[in-house]
Image (tube, rainbow, N blue to C red; front, side, top):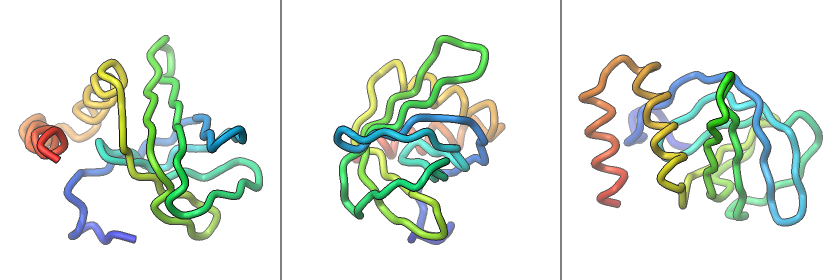
Length: 121
């Protein structure tokens, strides 16, 4: 797992419900933190996810019809948590995610640098 010094993208603590799908399996989970490049999740039920397995995270934003859909892969598992790395995200989802991060980070310049790094990857 990456330490904060190794991360290129700021994470925000964000507690919200979401759905994690891997293949034909699906589970409700709690989002513990979130970044432009991934998320840390806690499945609410026992859920098996292998490292490198492709997945889909769907996060419905409270009070809105907006949904962040992030396709990714399982990057790590430990202590009942699953870390995922984003591999693909649609324009609407990245727009909602960027706004959410901007509101929570309070540093638009930092977020702009991270967004530029994301699209140059």
